Image (cartoon, rainbow, N blue to C red; front, side, top):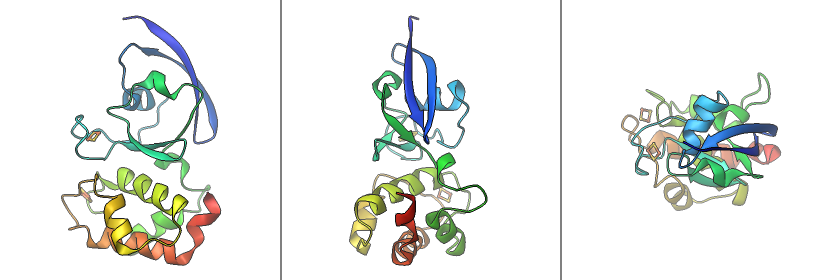
Length: 161
Ligand code: FES
Ligand code: FES
């Protein structure tokens, strides 16, 4: 398979990797640059656990061609915390028991971050819509919705952009 070099930023750090034709972003993130936080679930665009942000917008990394992130900014859960200080969304997820098995959590957090970045004061309906592409088999969604609303009310999510 022909491989081509691409450059992008991952959580603010410059990355340069060779990607194969047709290679998906999740494979490049997990195997190419060692960021294991985006999870592989369905691989078909239906579960949302592979959600990452590209230039601040949520994308399904299992359906995103890696070469399309050339020159763009990719954000994952690995970039949320500041050292030992969790992002307010992560803290709220802990406090609301919004993660049980945790498999959906990376995608939920990134979908929620994209929402709060563009709308710091979402309604419950906004939150439900924002995570509508993310499936959770454990929580029944209520703890996740409450966690996102709590993080929004704290206002702390804004400081991380
Ligand atoms: S693994 Fe990408 S949507 Fe399920
Ligand atoms: S916490 Fe298990 S799938 Fe959401």
